[in-house]
Amino acid sequence: YIALNNQPDKQLTLILRSSSGNRMAAYIGDGEADSQEVDSLIESLPKIPFLRKFHCYKYDGFWYRENHLRAVLSCKKHFRFQDSDILLTSFPKCGTTWLKSILYTIINRLRNPIGSEDHPLLTNSPHTLVRGFENDLYANNAIPDLSNMHAPRLFQLMHQLYHFVMRNHKDCFNSFWHFLNKLKSLEASTVSLDEFFDSFCSGRNAYGPFWDHVVRHWNVSLAMPGKLMFLSYEQIIEQPDHYVKKMAEFMGCPFSRVEEDEGVVSGIVKMCSFTHLSQLEANKSGRTKSGADHCAFFRQGEVGDSKNLLSSEMIKRIDQIAQNNFSPYGLKI
Image (cartoon, rainbow, N blue to C red; front, side, top):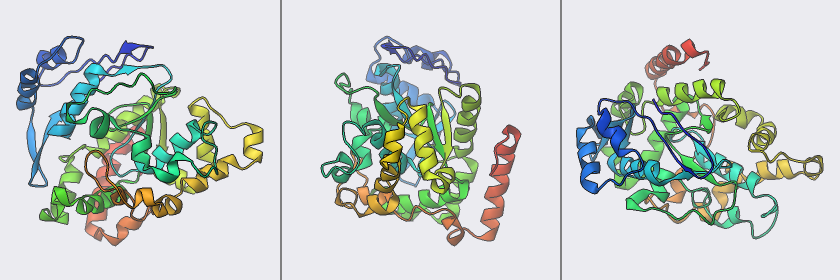
């Protein structure tokens, strides 16, 4: 399990229990660790192939590609929380790009008013404005200087807590599959749909298991509702204005009555909509630090599109797995 000590200017403290036992706990701490120690840790972890070109390593209950795991270990060692920090976390392809744009725009609406011609969201990918730990800030052995960031600082993290968004499991898989096939460097086409579906269902894939992500964050949201806001992609799609206001309240920057009367909320919804974002040149060209084309993050953004990919047998199987994993905790599929 992970225990977080979130205090001002204190280093992130983690208590980890796994098959690696004390060796892992010794590494994640205040002391220095050299590359040999990291290499030794990674070599000790369970390993599986991923997309026939990479391997994933099981760490703290989840599967990571090696470059992501190294970044996570560096982040956990060097990152220092501030009380005002906001972390957006999700399983891949659950609306992260969309939520990045919404949260960034809410937080920075006084500095960058909605409707301004030079708004950063008009000329930058949401992944440039809200930087992730694994794929960006701590990637490639980097240790970023974050001291000049304005509070509240907003980050994206795939394997932690605080502001979580989930998506229907079928649509998540559907979007994940199409996304991987857009990333030619991953050679996703070498793996069949059936193979990838099996790995997703079993949880033996990068960032998996999906089910454990959802359950872990759901339970923490119940125990610590003031620390973690649990949202679903489908909820936000259905009532975007309502949930934009809820997000602002949760982050401690609620909209004033004047702002609501002036259409700031609806302006954010429109500005951050799939239709608008996907048409911006910043999201049609360029790449993330990890090498993913910005355009790969925009396909359809629809609810229920998985029915066009999955067979009836696949749908029955994945729904049953979701039911088995979620129903004991009161989660509905």
